Length: 64
Image (cartoon, rainbow, N blue to C red):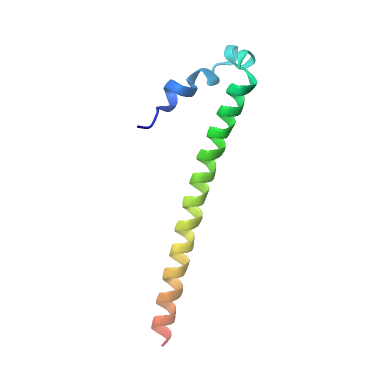
């Protein structure tokens, strides 16, 4: 079961709570953001690679 973003990290978005966070909370938050970004970038790269491979195969089949 995935946890909603609002429940877990909404308090990081308010300015008055930024200075009261512990180092552990900041580390968990930055690791979460890093994981989300890496996952999205990986999906984008894999989709682009799939499109390129498909088009290369299609071009090779047409030229034979």
